[in-house]
Every structure is written in C-alpha cells, then in structure tokens.
Length: 328
Image (cartoon, rainbow, N blue to C red; front, top):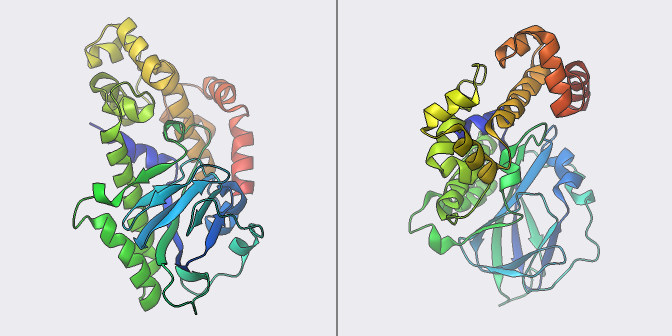
C-alpha cells in the first residue's frame, strides 16, 4: 500500500530548515511574527511555513500572540502548524513592544544555525534556557489536506518521548552543529528537522481521539485509509465510487458517508483535488505539454483537464504555470 503521508509531503514540496538557537537569561522575551511575514526570508519559494521550537535546557513559557501561556520544560517540542505569531518568554504574559519582522531579513551568517542571545548575560544566578528554533516549508495550494487537519499548536512534552528518544538527541545536535560548524551541518539539520515533523505527526495520529475527524484521522481509519492509499498510489486510474467501495469492503453509500464524515468531502471530489495538486506541481516544475500532464493525472483530453483545473483551482493551467514560475 502506498505510504500516503510520504506521498503527500513529496507533492507539497515539504522541506525543513534550522535557522537559529536561542540562549536566554531571565528576564527575556522573543516574539515570532506570523509565518507569512517572514517566510520569504527563511524559506523562499515556500507558500506556507511552520515554525517549531525545542527546549534543549531549562524551562520557559510560550503562547500564541495575545493568548494564554503554556509552560515548556526541558525536552519539550512545540509547533505552530498554521504559522501563527507567537511569544516565548521567561515568565508568562511578557511581550516585546519593539518586535517586528526586520531582524529575520538581516544578512545571514556564513553557516546556519546561528546563536541569538536574549537577556542580560552578565547577570549571575538568573535562570537560563537554550532553545532550538527551526522552520518547515510546504505548499498550501491548490490542495493540501494535511494543513487543514492540523491544530494551531502542537505541544509534545519531553516526558512523552521516552528516555533516549532521537528527537531529544536532535535538539542537542542543533546546538552542537552551531558551535562546531562542520561541513554539511546545515544539510544534516534540514533532514533531521523533516524527520522530526514526521515523528511528531505519527505521535499526533496515535493520540487522536476515536471521534476525531480530518485527513489524519482518515489515514488511521481502515476503510478510508485503504481508499486514500489507492487514490495516491494510482491517481490516473479510472476510479469510480463502485470500484473504490469494493476495494474498501463497504457499500457505496457507506464509503461516501465515511469519507464525508472524516474528510469533509466525498472520495471522488478528493480524487479530483489530489489530481489538481499533482498537476500543479508538474505545471510549475516541468515544461511538459498540458495534454501529457492531463494524461498523467487521469484525463483523456486537454479540454477536460483544463475545465477541471479551472473549476478547482480558479485559474487555467496556463495561468497557474505563469504565476507559479513568476513567484518562484
């Protein structure tokens, strides 16, 4: 069966980056603007960016900008899948009145990650923290069901990771690579941050309540998960609701209802949108003719493909290709 999560992450150009690590001495506060405001500086070409932070040493507080603070302990991870502005601080409720996005556009050091110091480092005896901070980039358009299924905040307590978990080791590696500056360090950390995100997603899926809905809940469902694997594994096949229901071992009405319940759309609509995501990537990344792309995603004619693409995406394939390449 197709690994649907891996398939989706490939299709939406998922990639990671480690930008900096922070050493803070209380009192300190750091604000991160909304991801849309800083993505061009950190991950150019990514339509959406997910900030994440791992607490290497000490404890701190974190909150959505203007929201309630949550305490983080050593070894904890926190992600902001919707790219919300957020605040990290030595005490709850602190804000930085001078925070803006300009610092993220400053000239980069020769090698990432670099260290950021907060607070008065001449202060003796004040509580200290070390935080590894990174970002994950991916496409949001035309169809990324994963983003719709993720909460605004994903907090993974270090105590839930278990002793010797590689994620905990990863946090220390960020700091070590920043200090030692070994060749290939950036590439190592990029790949490790991608692995970290997948591991967090796995744990999130395992912890979903039985009544939870969304794309990740659909992956876990035996019938819907099997159909998703078929659609992702063979998107160009001439699927019908009847053939999919037989594969899932359900009646057509039952499969339709289960899909709508979990994913908010029927299976054939999901297939159309997934085909448009695959087609949009080919339009952006290749010079293939529209007919060849149409055939690759399950359409017999360029006209039928163009109609479906414009209906789902809002623009013609030619207009999408021009816009994607100019913005890229």
